[in-house]
Amino acid sequence: MPKKERKAIEKHINAYKDFFKANSQVRDCDIIRQRIEEHKAEESIMAALARKRRSELGRAVKIAGKIQKMKPLSLEVKEKAIEKRTSQVVRKLTGRVKESLPVVISKSEEKELLHELRKDLKRLRYILEILPADSKTKHGKKLAKIIGGNVTTRLEELQEVLGLIHDADITLEYLQQVRGPDEIIEKENAFRDQHYRRFVDIMSS
Image: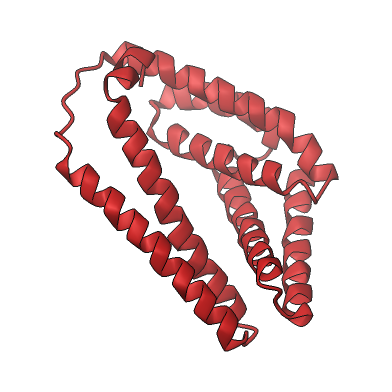
């Protein structure tokens, strides 16, 4: 939304962001559990992960309770203002994708940048899905010059493969924190390498 309207509901937006972050932490715990269960991880590692999930879930529920008590939103925003702001956001995201792609394609260790690229591509995909046909075509053509292929299909492919890479990264980070078995770490690294090569192949096609 335009800046003026965002400012008017800043308290709501911040609460939603906090809830999303907390919920994402719960989701990460679920992904890590799924990944390491496949390798039959030690009970102590699984127990520590369960405690972490309970803590994050409690935080998410607490934030959700605060959101429930907030007054319902009531905003009137002109359609032209929304279209203008949407175009600004799409241009900004497209610019960031163009800037980060060459780096992450050549450097697999750029984990944080890969994560940010995944989020930017996800935002672009969802925004393009709700745009009017003419705006979608205009912005889609510009994005196609950067990521290639059919924009809708390519965004879905990239979101999937970058999501799998991110799942491996958060699992490896957790295993390193708890000093997990080298065997599981090696398997997760192999899983990550496989999907990173797939990501590079997609961008090369």
